Length: 371
Image (cartoon, rainbow, N blue to C red):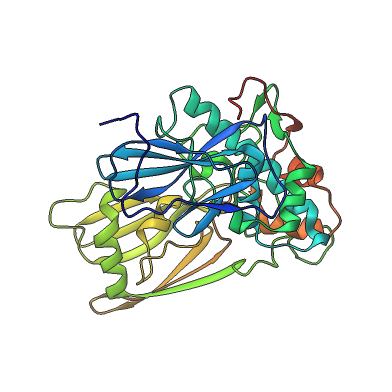
């Protein structure tokens, strides 16, 4: 039930702290970021701190203000923050703390993240977002956002240097996806997602010029990876997760008797993974296979860019080894590739033109809600 009185949040500490850094987004588009749900309170409100100060939630400081919205499961806390200040808390968490020499990668990340944010903002305002109460969430479901405490000087400098710039294809701002490591070649959108694709989301080689087989992203910690599962572990993960991606008979899929890559996409990723069990043969899309074949801790496979070898026993599969490249979906900008390209002297514009062919960089569209 809503009331006009000021909100008292039980078990929620929301306080103001003085700001010691520059910032401010007066006149900038305002973003509504869902930070999390906390124990129920009575009414929603907007906490607007004194000028030049920050707000705190769960021990973290944020620019802008907070709104508390009652829901069936508690109170949703939403950060209302200017677009440029929001990006200050996104870029360093998405790309890491980078040295000044890699500023071009940070600038490319800032433009890609701003473009992604604008498309989410437009979708939400058109009634096509996840919720009427917020535009984005502060996690990998959208973009990782840590607020003021996450800000880093070089990342903030990249946000300032690219202020108001977005990626466009023709006259529209594009969704500009990115992932950690492409593993040598990015994927077209239709290879990974159930979509018709986009002309600017095509596969792009990350190979460096020259005869030596080197890639701009081979500096990444997960450029190569390997996972090993016992037959028992494979049976357990398939029994737990397969039903979300294939039609499984009642009683479960049964023990896995064979596993193989049925076909590959043009970029070399798994197109379909075939699992033959005691109760049938099941085919899983490559990107979905990352969620089906998990390690003992429930971790997704790093990418769908992998091969499979198995060892058999008298009772079925004894062991499966998966060897792969890359980390993430592989569509759009390769973040470690952008870092490698920045080290090689490429500019942010060159980096973005490479990973999003046919796009241009231009100003924000008009008409976005502002502070």
